[in-house]
Structures are given as structure tokens and as C-alpha cells.
Image 1 (cartoon, rainbow, N blue to C red):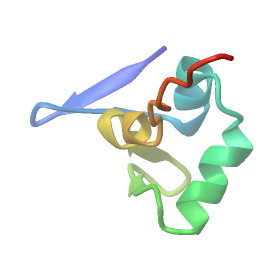
Image 2: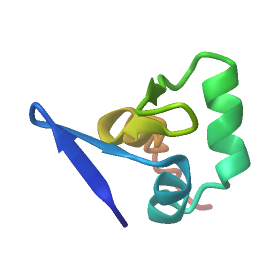
Image 3: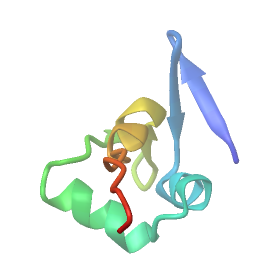
Image 4: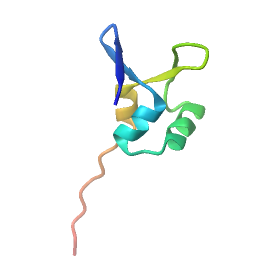
Length: 67
């Protein structure tokens, strides 16, 4: 996993975020396309995601009681 830090904010590539979270990179790209996930351009063909924004996609589910 590779992250870059700029002004105290950690960024990573979509493929790095996918590996770190276990999500498919296609899912992350869908979230970028629908505006759920912000993307930052770091060059003509380079995009980065904020680590905190990617982590915010992960939501803890409430515990259920088994019968």
C-alpha cells in the first residue's frame, strides 16, 4: 500500500485503496462517477483519493441477535 501525504492529508491511488479495503476497483470507480467519492487529479493521467474518504465508505452494520 502506498500513500502520499500533502499538508497532513493522506492520498492513495484507486488500486491501492481497493487492495487495502478489499473492495473492487470497479466499485471505487463507480463511487467516483456518481459523486459519492471525491477524486483529486495529480497529473494528466494520475488520480488520487483521500484515505479518509475511502474509509468513510465502510459502514459498520448493527449487530443482529441470532435466534
